[in-house]
Image (cartoon, rainbow, N blue to C red):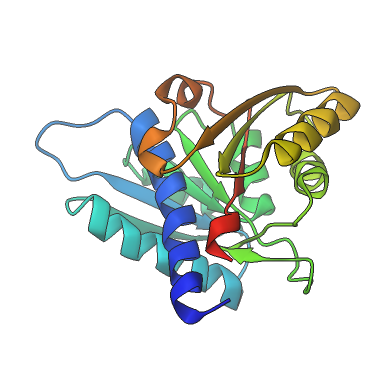
Length: 208
């Protein structure tokens, strides 16, 4: 993968999650939107992912910003409660599970690092996406065991990938909804209303 293709991969994945966060987050008239960032731990891969999101956020939503809320350690609940922004970004599964267990009601964006485990793991905005749809879905199901619906956002992926994803979901007892799009702007808004009951599987084959 060339440096240009790598940058496109980061931007594409970052855009997808940022659109998710802002489409489900209510706008506050006259106030710049803020997304609170809660991290599972300190890790270079997480730093890279958050930096990519910050860059894309400044490009797509100039009046919005990321606010660091620190790590999941003593005092994190108080920091999250004191944060008044409309949405949160959980960096890593520990942060996501902590927010869900705390009953957080705001929209939560989610990025995680699964590995890295090259050559299978492929870094896309902080998430190592497996080349196999089945592997991607099984990893998401492991992190979110209570998941009952999975919506797949596939970037020009062939029908065989969609079929594999659907079969994998059936084996795990998940309902499956696929959406094949050519650009982020084509994301179906209706899918974004079902937050915390599904997750995106982002296939970015054209970016490798």
